[in-house]
Length: 436
Ligand SMILES: [Zn+2]
Image (cartoon, rainbow, N blue to C red):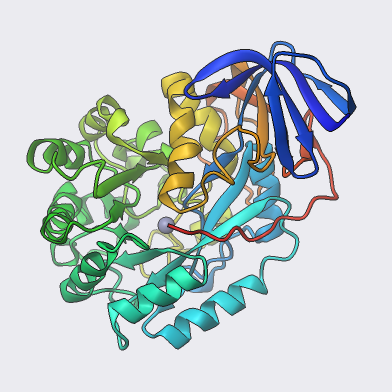
């Protein structure tokens, strides 16, 4: 007798769907078998797809943005949005540390903010221009279960910029394989910092910013045989450049992440009256760059959202002034349906097993297999409209868009968090220790 079973669904394993049944004991998957066994609770998934819980590897919870604005979602509202989107693990960021002691403090502070989480979460460490060595920082990040270290090559005024020397030192250290360096890649010297008009965002930060910075990172990664990951790649040309010039390290030492907003929208929205809803960095790109990115989607290992919504009021109040404009948009709830609408089930690995492996959560997360956490999403295929937000944000540029998949139920470690569209209280999200 098993605790739970999900029967008659099309179950995703090893890149394909098979009609079979999933049996669960406690928090873990116990068995996947076409045979029918008894269970205390049974879910009929006839006509539904059964996939591993989605992992959103890039979210910002309660981020302090420009203009004194705090991003809308805390761990509770963020995890409700997550659950409605089939997301059973999201990865948030620690504050940017210059020393080991700071990194430890940021970890402790973050763990005090995670109450109310309904799904699991992992954390990326973050660093800035260093006082301690990259080696000491990497040791600490690995020891505390946050083996990915985020660096920014821009944002000097916010004090989180890392110099080329720091970035290279981290990449060199990452060759040992126990940490991955994840980089927000924009060449700070190529950004127009003088123009403060949000409508000019795309011109202020042209494609060369990304392409040239990624080229430097690829050089250091090749030289040291490091372990690098570029977050939110947004220019198709960046991917083409890497394919042409760095095919020896792409998908070996260097991995790419992108986000749905760069597939859905283009920079023409900055000419619209509601331009402020799309104020994000890096900015949206031309239709041509977007087309090239879409064509190269298979080169992207991980789709993640960069979820960081602010209220419409906070966005409007900035009156187009980049000095006080809170930058970011939400997406956590619609990551899976949006990307599924482009590429069907081809996106599942990029939302599950790939991020799990990339950030040391595999095989606890990212796969439907005996012994893995029972993190499971049930979804249907067919036209659906994005018409609701379960995030604390009052707006999303995705509202009104048509998608081709709908999340029906989401299970986190053996408990339904959303069942047939209803939120279930009673599960508590936990920190997942990452180990590379
Ligand atoms: Zn981000």
